[in-house]
Image 1 (cartoon, rainbow, N blue to C red):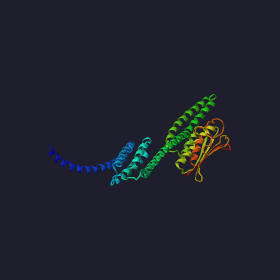
Image 2: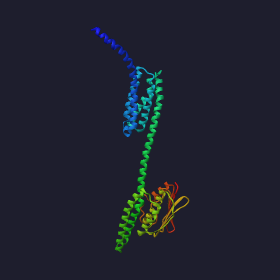
Image 3: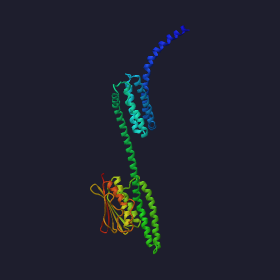
Image 4: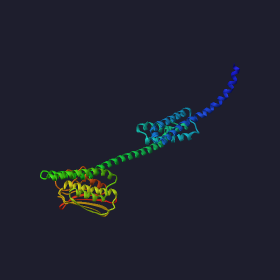
Length: 384
């Protein structure tokens, strides 16, 4: 029996003598390659996977960092190895890139633990191949390499802040658009609504003595209401295509046909930017609305539009009864133009809101009493 075992032992012992040194070489190499492959796979998954890959970034980076720390600890226990430091460097750089991506895209609650673990793994890789003389030297080595990791994290955080600012800028612009929409609705719709109020007031005055006149006033109220609905629809379209100065003729004709004061136009051909022309149109709309609301005794309104020294000058003058001067730059203009106490209720935006838009464009808006009436003058720069 013993003689039969001897040939087997003679075969196994040389084989073991060959396998053990080979395993001693292969196992450390595999241990070095595995975390490198894990880190590269995690980075590729995030880059190629888009939003889905970003959602799993903290988990993938944490798993790769865990493998890296385990291999580093094993090397520290079993003894450092030389000749494989290039793979360790590649692994550290890949982990540092993951830290930057975590700082940019991952939620804060997940980014903090995952980023710390991944950054630690990327900083201590030198301990696999170098034996520091003291713990202080080991700390200095890792801290020096960790500065680069912190720099990458800082770049990721800066890009994250840019994304946050962009999102906030979009939200602020949407809020400004909503406010602009409210102002436009006031400027255009209030013009017809104020006519309805004026016709209803006229019907109340003559209703008892002249029922036929009251009936005609009610018919005009109905027509004005229909126009208000049309204006509301048109306003939505005009928000996409701003009104131009060539639309003042139609506006003046509608104002005159409504039984209000007669509008006399003097409009020069001016090449004005779209936003300047649109704001000039709104100035005339607001002025006519205020004439109807605050100067119902007016019989004539003069509207003049001209270019003067690089400035678009819009002047609206009525012959209604005037009051004290109200002048504004910014929000300092009151909401009514014209005299009399009747109908002194101010609009939600009115001239004060219009003056803010004019000032934002670098212009001025002035409402003042003139002999026998009121005048509204807007100056808008043609070149911003």
